[in-house]
Amino acid sequence: MIRLALLATLAYVSYAGYNVPPAQDPVPVPVPVYPSYPAQQPPQYQPPQYEPPQYQPPRPIYMKPLYLPELPAPPQFLYPRRHHHHHRHSRSDSRSHEDHRPRPDDDRKCRNVRTCEHDAKCVEPLFWKSGKTLEVSCPQGYFKLYANGNEILSEGVGVSKVLTCNRNRWSTQDIHGDFITVRSIGCTKAK
Image (tube, rainbow, N blue to C red):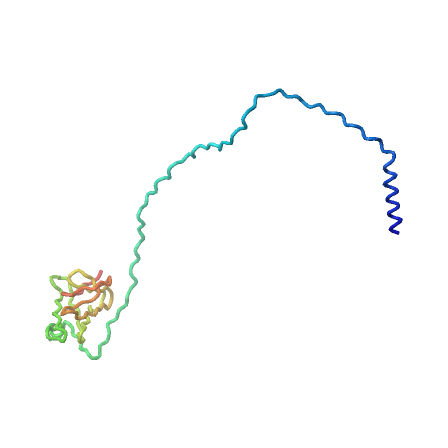
């Protein structure tokens, strides 16, 4: 069967080759004649020239300080501690106020703390002595506890502060956390 297909294909191809007209020479195409120009150098590449951009300086920025409103401090409810082994002295006691102040003959030899120096609005604080420490508190009400006339130690209801004896002087931290030496102490009614 393959032989038959090959034979048919060969006969078709050979028959197709007959009756073909002979090839003719192609007609010559006229060549255009251009006028001659003098020889020129090929153009050299030049990078494009750009103008500088129209630059405008940035606008100046004027900074103003930002003031945020300061929120009031949260209320602190400080209650006086109960001391079972110490006797609380008050101004109405018949004893002298010198009885509850630290004495120079104490174990740490700290000086006496003066109270209410040159201040008519001052209220004397209450003292509790316990070995190397002295607890100072203001009476009931909203008070400021201050030292040395102007350094605020604490402010609020039931204000108290613990003083410690360091190098023969009483010291504590003020309201900002800085250590100070206390020479005088007092309470004033806060507004």
